[in-house]
Every structure is written in C-alpha cells, then in structure tokens.
Image (cartoon, rainbow, N blue to C red; front, side, top):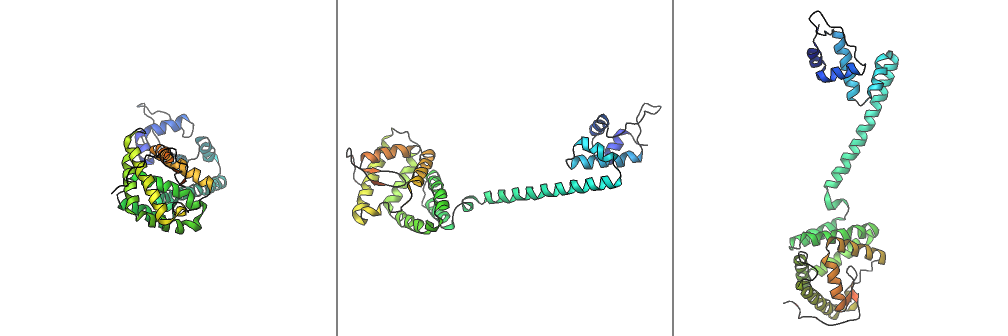
Length: 266
C-alpha cells in the first residue's frame, strides 16, 4: 500500500495534484488506516497516470471524468479523437514555427534581393540606420505593388548613390535626425540639397531628377512612412519648397518663394 506521497511520485505528479483530483471526483479517496493515513493500491497509480495523461493532453477535467467511466470502445474512440486534435495542433504550431523562421529572415522576407543588396550598400557607405529603415519601409509597398519595376528602380538608385554629393546628403541627413525642427543645420541641409538638385537638373536634364513614375497613392504612402520614421524630413520638405523643390519620394520643381541657397558642399 502506498502513501499519497508515494502515489504522486510513481504517477509523476505532485501531492497537490492528487488532492485536486480527489476534490474534482476523478480519483477515489481511500479511507484512512488505523494510523490515520490514507493508503493507495497499485490500481490508484494506473488510474492517476490515466488522469494525468488526459489532463496533460488538454482534455478538460469534466471530460476526463466521463472518459474514465467509459467502456473500452468508447474510451478508444475518445482517445483517437484527442490524438487527431493534438496532431492538428502540432501542424498549426509547425506553421507558426515556419512563420517565425521567415520573420527571422528580416528584410529578405519582404524585399527582393536587389533591394536588400542596395540597403546593405547604404550601410556600407556609413548611412545612418534610421535613414536605411526609411528607405526600406518605402521599398516594401513599392516592391509589393510593382515587382516588375524593382530592377529598374534599384539600378537607378545605385547610379544616383554613386554621386558623392548625394552620399554627403545622406550622411548629413542622418545627423539631422537628432536635431529639432528649428535647428539651423536643417536649413543648411536644405540649401545644399536644393543646390545639388539644381546642378543635377542642369547636368542630366529636368526629367532626370525624378523619372521613377510612381503612382500618386504610393508616393503619399511612402512620404507618410518617411515622415513617421524621420520627423525632421517634414521640416526639410518645407525648407526645400521655399527653395524651389517640392515632394519627398517624388521631387519636382516648384515656384520659388524665396532663395536661400548656399554654395554646394565641397
């Protein structure tokens, strides 16, 4: 005969669990012996293991009670049903694991290889990671909407980024993210950017500044993403508008309200 502690040990549960199953009416509670202890037979171990197994499989205790009272055929059918449910849960969890693995893939999950390569190139040039994230977030809807044009757009971006003046702009913009909207360095940055855009238009033609031909709704979405991730970008756009340029994702000539252009950076 076994004590409650021995019973719990053999069945792989706690004494507290045994008492809980007693309270729920799942495991009969034996009478106390002359010493005042409850003693359990070997059959109690088998019954407790069955309870533990069913409960561990997620079977509600109310159903466990019914299963323990079922005949052999009913019990076997119920166990088969539980097994199928567990298999379905395993399949679903496996799908969750696959999704988690995809998320671990990072940028390559949602972006074509050439875009990931371009973003890595920006990092290699020393561009602030926050600017890289703005670029990445803009590419995600762009690549999803027009995947057939990604190669064209990335080739254009790689050509642009080869210009040291644009690299200097990227690097300065990264520094500007740590400053307030009224920081004079934003004004200086707008001056340099306006001069650069003017030089680019003179060298390559007005249409070269922005010939990506992105649909207006996408432009608005990408602008919103940029302004959310890099708040100084909105102030920079205002300053650029004063210098004859409008837009962020899609830059275009605008009427100049006042001229404050400084000499181009060396």
